[in-house]
Image (tube, rainbow, N blue to C red; front, top):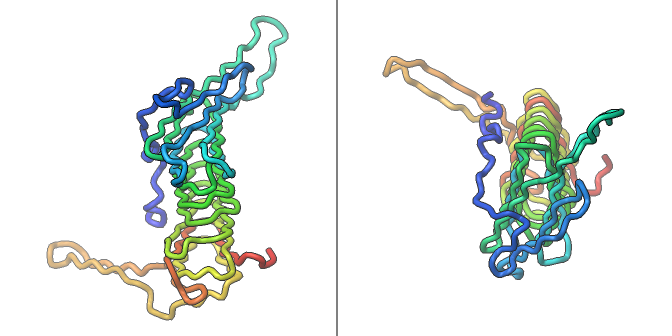
Length: 290
């Protein structure tokens, strides 16, 4: 669909990482695995960064399952993976069910970049990642799980095909997409010169910025309305036209007028894009009543 040409199915974006088993320590002791004794207890690994004085960069991809990232005042990256075992009716007699809760968690750390994957193609697995406050993340999920990030200060690149995206009390910048769910974000502070983009096909986009944010905004919503607490100054210029003239080569003449609305907030700044198809767009000012 032309409206969302840039939203490709994330199956083509799930990265294949060369990784090591999470239960085995890396040379130099970078990974410290914790013992697991009970069924369905999470696989848990603490990762020492190569240089704790620098921000971490976390990459995680899931085929089936959700990803939760939360910031804390620490220097390690702590990863927990838990199999989501569905409740099933217990047989009155016969063999008892043995719960298979292995996750196939794999982690690789190099130069402060932490790559995380699981065998979520085989069963539904949920990841919980605790990171130092100053960190950047690149997160991908496809089925049966939401992506939730809380308290992180850095660059966020988040994409969920069949789940929701919630970014809570974050700082820095974000590129957030949800094909079939909402995108909600609440910024405590923004990076002054970083562009951002928020998009969804079938869900609302609801983003709250500090009252003093400065931005150029590009807004497109095919079947939904747009609301804002900010005094958005819309540009009076004519809509952008794309002209293709192939008549001299046996082709045809084509004109397309862009439906995107352009404006500024607080005098303008970096580009913020909001693109939606069937949902509403809310651009909120922090402190304004909802």
